[in-house]
Length: 383
Image (cartoon, rainbow, N blue to C red; front, side):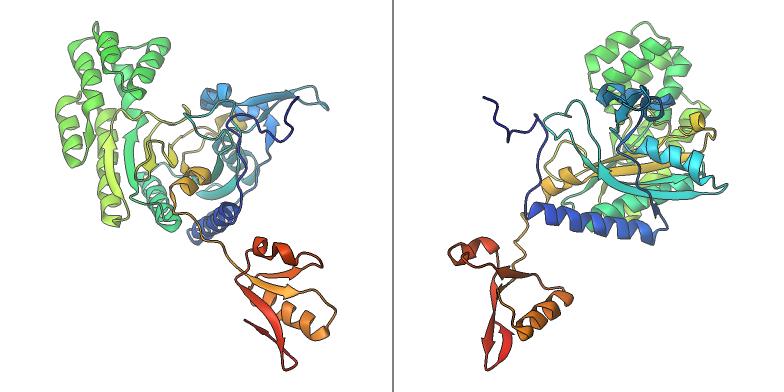
C-alpha cells in the first residue's frame, strides 16, 4: 500500500523553525535589493515552454517539467529558473529604454537534483538590464556580496569566471558547435585528461591554452599567469581586464574571500560574460550563481544587455546555525474584555500570543511559549 505522506525523491518540506528563518531571510534580502533600486516582480509558476526555453536558455530543457495545457493544447513548462522570466518581463512588458533593475523570490522546480540537493530550490535573485558596461557587473557583484553578508553565510567565498573567455578560445581554435560543447563539458567537470585528449590535434597556441585553463585559478597571480600563457587576442584581453576590475572591487568590499577560476563554466548555458559562483564554508555546492547573459531577451523583441544572480535559500539555510525557537506568550481562553484587550495590545507590539484552547493543558509544552499571561490584582501581566 502506498504511504500517502511520502514526498517524491529530493522534494522536501521546510518545517518550523526553519520555515520562519527562511521567510525572515527572504524579506531581508528583498529589502536589501529594494535599497539598491531593484523592483520586485512575481513571474508565474508555469509558462508556455517555448518562452521558458528560448534562445540561450535551451540548456534548461532537461531540467524542466513539461505538461500539456488543457485550455490551449500547447506545451507548458514549470519554471526551472526565473532568470529567463525576468528577461521576458524586461523585454516585453516594462520596455524601459534605460537600465531596468528587477528582483524576485519564489520556488523553481527541476526534473533532477544537483547532487543530493532538493529539486525545488527557493530562488531569490536580482537582474540588471540595459547596460553593457563593466559598471553593471560591478554593481551586481557588490549586491551579491552584500546579500551573502545580509544572509549571514559563514566563510563566504566568491569565485569569478568568464564565459566569454571560453567562447573566444573555442572560436579561435575553430571548434564546431558539437566539439565546443564537449570541450565545455570536460572543462566544467575539471576532466584534465579529457581536455588534453580533445585538444591534442589543435594548433599549439589553442592546445596549450585549453590545457592550461583548468590550472588557472587563485588570486591575482592566476590572472597574471593567464595574460602570460593565453593567446593575446582582443576578446581574451577584454575578459581578463573585466576580471581584474571585478577581483579588485570584490577584495575592496572585504565581505568574502575572492578568487578567480577560468575553467569554472557553471550555469545553464545562457551566460556570455563575467560569471559569479558563491560558496559557504564547508560546502561544495554553490549557494548563489550568476553572471552576464546579454541578448537573452532577443526572442521577445529586444536583445538587451543583462547581468544578475540568484541565491538558493534552501542551500543557505543548510549552512546557517540552527535557529532558536521564537517562544511566545501563552494566554488563557476567555471572554474577559481586559484579557482580549491585553492580547490585542501584545500582538500589536509584535509579540506572539497563543491562546490555550480548553482541554489542551496537558500539551502546553508543544505551544513553544516561554511566558504566560496571568491576572494579578485585576490586571493582566506577562510572567
